[in-house]
Image (cartoon, rainbow, N blue to C red):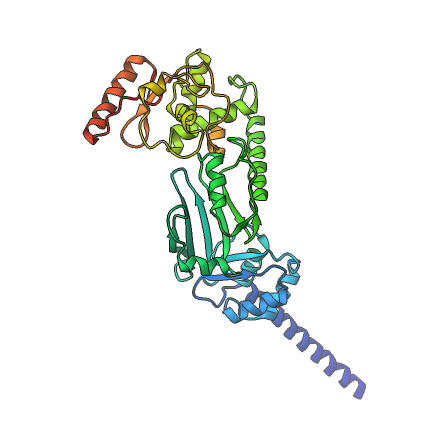
Length: 394
């Protein structure tokens, strides 16, 4: 009888314990997957080589998670404990522990924290200092300067010296290889000399996250690898019947398209004009190629083209030569490469600026001349009349 009572009590206790464990597991799952405690966005910084234990303690101290232990246990359960990725990541208000595990193990570009950005542009280079406002989740500019003619602000110096700040290089579409090299030389947080300017068109405009002291030549090599991969993929997917014999010819056309319009949606139409001209045996007659022949891609021609320059035969003067110039005239982005290899199906063979930042396209010379007349009126009203031909003029 005594043993029966003991067995009964033990069974009751076991059931109670199992119920308690089940309740604890259910609570833990709810706590792990339910809304987190932070009422504001949090910037979570994962240091190189950081352990899951250190990260969980950091998150608990920030108030991003309610329990360091549950965060570690949940990451283990998701088999993500060894997948932490170095970087700074923004997690939204009330993010669950499960969400945060996903963010810090997915990797990708950093999305918050202090960052120093060198923007290599067509007209100038700019160094920016930005920081994340965790209340709004938006980056705010703290300082900027032009390294060509301005002193570096103290705030940028401090940020560059900080081990926590991220460094980025952003290369604009349409810059030349010479401009990229000059921009990288101005980046004090990079290291090493550049022996020669890479081939025109061979570098991919993009954003590159680098570490302080990264090699300039290694970064250029990365840019070249990306551009090679982009061109190969776009060339492989091209339709039949285009007037290019090699990927390099497509790259030349993409660079012309890139320099001819700043309106992204126009790129396929601009490409169609030049493809139609090639197919009809017409000259391309595009100002950006002439300008490249004058500047060699070193800087910007801050004036209109002179009649004497347009009448001088050079390998890049497409008013005087047949076909395309011998090399690209800039580094085109993926969208321009795609447009060159997937031009719109049009009958257009002319285009001219329309005064809105875009262009008016024409199928006939009469139609084009009317568009030119309207553009000349706009130029006159702005006091910008010039003797040079218009873009896409014939």
